Every structure is written in C-alpha cells, then in structure tokens.
Length: 491
Ligand code: BLG
Image 1: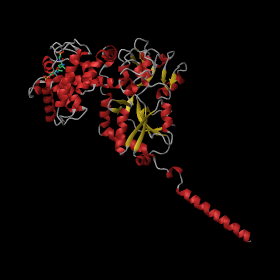
Image 2: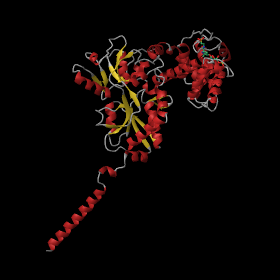
Image 3: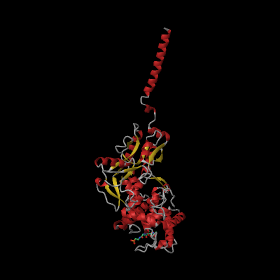
Image 4: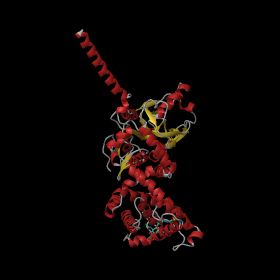
C-alpha cells in the first residue's frame, strides 16, 4: 500500500515535472523563437557582416580605402540600420554560399549575384537592384559565334558555382554536344584575360562585368547575348529567418525611389563605356608602352604638389596620350598641354620637355584646386579643378553662376556640368561675364579623366600587386605578360 502510494506519488511527481517541462517547451514551440532573429543579432552586435568578391564591379581597395558598387550600396544599407559594415571576401562562389550558411558566418551576400533556380536551396534573394545580360565573350580575330549551336566544339570556361555554369548546364540539355569547364580558382577578370590571351575560346559573363573590365582586356568582344536580362539581388542564408531580407528589400525600394541607387549606378557604370573598343585597346597599349617612361616624373610632381600621381597621369593621357611633343592648332603644347601663358606663369621654359610639362601641369592643377570655393567638397572639388584646368577659372565661374540662376547647386559638379555646354551657345554666353567657351569639351575632358583615373586606381591598387590582374602586365612598367605569379609588381 505504502509502496503503491509512494510509487503513485513518484509517478505523479514525474508526470508533473514532465508536464512542466513540456509546458516550458510549449512556450518555446519552435527552437528558433528562443534565438534572436538575424536582424536583432545585427543590431546587438552593431555590425552588418557582408560577404562579397574582390572585383571591379563589387569590392576592392583603392588608395582612399574600400570601394566598389556593392560595397557602397551595402554601406548605405548598414548606415540605414545604424550599424557598422564589415566586409569579407570569398575566393569562390561555392565558398561564398557555404560561409553565408554557417551559423557564425556573414549574414548578407552582396556580390553581383543572379537569383537562379539552383541557388534557391542555398539562399533567399532580395528584390533586384541591377539588370544584367549574360554575354558570350570571344576574342577579336577569332571566329565569332552568333547562336548557341556555335558554342559546340569551342573551349568554354566559366566560374564554378556561377549562374553561368547553371545556364550552360541547362543549355546542354538541348545541345548535348556542348562542352564547358568550370573553375573555382579564377575570377571574372581571369576569364576575360584568358580569352584575351587565347588560353580559352569563350566565356560567359554578365554585361556589367564586361563593360567594367573591357578596358583591361581590349581584345575581348561580345559574341552574343545568351538569353534574357536577369536581375542581381542580395542574398541571405536559406531558411525561415527573413528579418534581414525584409529590411534589405525596404532599403532597396527606398534607394530606388529617392534616386540614390541611380546615382550610384552612374558613378560606377555611367562612364565605363567612355572609351569604346578602340579607346580601350589604345589605352591598354599605352599603359604598357608609354606610361612607364613618365611614371617617375608623375610621382615626383605629385609628391611636390600633393596631388595623386594617378590623377596627373590621367590628365596627361587625356591631354596628349602621354606624348611629349603634342601640339594643338591653337598652339597649346606638350604632354600636359600647357598654354603659353600658363607655362610662363608656372615657370616652364620648354613645354616640350615632359619633365617640365608634368611639373608645370601639376603646379597649375594644385593652384586652381586650392583656389576653389571652400564650399566645394571632394570629390567634386577635384572635378571642378579639372574643369578649370581645361576651360579656365573664369569660364568655370560663369558656368557656376548659370547653375545658381537655374536653382542648381554651384558647388556640385553634376549640376555645373549641365551648364558648361551653354557657354558655347550664344543665347547663354552673351549673358555671361567671360563669354564664349567650348564648355561641352570640358565636360568630356573631366569625364574621360575620371575614367582613366578609375582604371589607374584599379590597376595600381595595393591588393592587386603581384596577383592575377597584375600578371596581365597592364600596369607593370616595362614588364611584359610573362611576369610569374606572385612576383611583386614594381609599382
Ligand atoms: C587651358 C589652360 C588654362 C586656360 C584655359 O586653357 O588650356 N590650361 C593649361 O594651360 C594647363 O590655364 O585658362 S585661363 O588661363 O584662365 O584662361 C582657357 O584659355 C589645355 C587648355 C586648352 C586645351 N587644353 C589644357 O586642358 C587645348 O588644348 N585646346 C586646344 C583645342 S584645339 O585642339 O586647338 O582645338
């Protein structure tokens, strides 16, 4: 009896404790609910950890620090969440998705990713922020494929785990003879270089990648677009936690509406096609053949006048294609194209001496730059100084006044650039203080220099030295393409 009672009490106690446990567990029906959401974790840690790839279209370091389209967009997102942005890079797409799905891994992938069927098991994608078209790339001078059937029998390489690998695998279902290879050890720049150097016949990349990299690989050409345009989106780990994705979508919608996404696109992609094929080819050639002769002089003048040497080099390229005896029909001369008056004022005796021309140009640039309104901030201040270098400070002042009269901001380059072409139209220049000027040319002048400057920044960025792009030899003075991997560049 006693034993029974004791047993019953024990059983009751056990049942009770089990019930309590179940009850407690019941409050916590899904194990996830006990965990903070991704968004809560980000807010608690005060940091948004983003994973990306190192490429001109996504993320890289330049002399001013971290940059790139994806980096800038992600930074704005982190700002909107009131947290710090922490960027890490993956060496391959497979690694990127693996790390994204690790519990302690980065929470967002911002890496120019297409939301494909195959990726849906690995990630959830945000709304679109950029449209791109997949393009088959071939080498100029080789047979140009014009339709999918033409891909058969050609050596094709794409990135392992890429949307392009998925696309070709899909195509292979209807074209069984199609062969292609995938590699995890390369980046898009490597694929383009391999086509450029005839190591492979063809590759498949997104239109934005090609546009951005064309200049480094002047022999590559678009064969044809493979399929429709597709959207790039940000990715979060696959799973039920959509707290970050909701915020990302809200943010992307907002930047689309308020125009800041468009401004970012303009900044990174707006002038990528300034050069065209011929210009890109010529620039790449001159980068190897001519720049090495003057690089030391650019660096020396840059140091003396506290200007970035790459900017001086970019001016020199725009002015004369790095030719010391360039002469215009109006008598402007030399590598930095100094007018007689300006040369005299800068103490240049012989304008055709490249050392003197570069030093004089640097001195003049620094002078106009420091003389500009305090209200202009960088980088606009630099673009204004370039404009003044070309059209003179007086005409620039006229264009700024026109901007003011139109309700635009005279200290914003984007606004004043709209006014400069008016200096060549009588209805406008007749009302200005200094009259006619070829302001439209100045807009081109600044735009081209910015493009050259971007390229020089990319090819001389610290982390690229001795790596694959450097191997292409584009920026290594006096060194051809046989430079062994890993050898430090001379820059
Ligand atoms: C610039 C001068 C400015 C000058 C403007 O002209 O030359 N810059 C230099 O010499 C570095 O100093 O401003 S001003 O002194 O305040 O009047 C306006 O006169 C040079 C420009 C002219 C242009 N390239 C540097 O950008 C040029 O070569 N024009 C010739 C065109 S064409 O080939 O004859 O059609």
